Image (cartoon, rainbow, N blue to C red; front, side, top):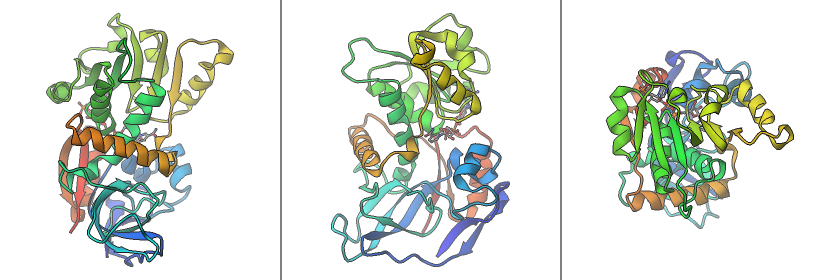
Length: 330
Ligand SMILES: NC(=O)c1ccc[n+]([C@@H]2O[C@H](COP(=O)([O-])OP(=O)(O)OC[C@H]3O[C@@H](n4cnc5c(N)ncnc54)[C@H](OP(=O)(O)O)[C@@H]3O)[C@@H](O)[C@H]2O)c1
């Protein structure tokens, strides 16, 4: 089968399309013929190998898993003899397992992994752009920010990077939970961020929300651009700063904003990819329901065939994609 393989860290050109062996499903696995995946910002960070924390996860000297791709959509082509949950021909989507590997024509997954039949109202291609961003946004908002649709007093939340993958899901899901949402992006994305439900949008190239005199219950920095120290004076008394991007500073700030140091404001990072499959499955079911009831939708920027994956990496490397970048196969 064809796959996008990288054997060393570096620029987009390290990713090459090569022939590799097609996987064979074990008795409890399904073989998925992949129709689409994405190049995410995480793929870009893992590929360039410049981030120390990323290197600890994906390989110190060279990548442990040679095929990237953290989400997929496709058709089940074969099932192992003990598989009971899926049938050949099912149209499915989900996050990859710990081995990634969705930038390839086929992938085997244990049937207990997070695999769902696709939402009725999304194409098989477009639903590949759901798992990573939405499965990151939900735990940050529900478990970190404690947003809930039954809350009587809407929380005020700022979402930095509101036009990115995690950001576009975060805006829509925060609105579903009834929050008052302020999105931060540049001028060219203001209409997009408003169209997905933001109550207010701040153009970071002109205005700085940390100096606007307002206070917020939650600041969610989806892209690691505004560290806690910059945002803490914009937090309400019991406000929380959340970031999806790991740095040494956020690890220290988490420590210094615990109860031991009697801080009422909190700083927090979550590692949503490390959760159990059962938790991700429950969350993806919830996300699928939100999609099918038209409460949220994926924002898709560009689509590239697998053969042009280097161009997709180059585009994601700019740091200015809108929502998601899809890779199509087959
Ligand atoms: N902790 C976890 O469990 C976890 C899980 C998944 C992902 N992540 C992390 O989440 C991060 C977000 O990934 P993503 O794919 O959502 O990001 P992304 O799509 O790459 O974000 C790009 C967007 O950010 C906007 N942007 C750039 N600079 C900005 C600034 N200074 N202020 C506000 N917006 C700005 C850009 O808008 P303009 O073009 O308008 O500038 C663009 O639309 C990644 O760093 C990834 O490592 C963490």
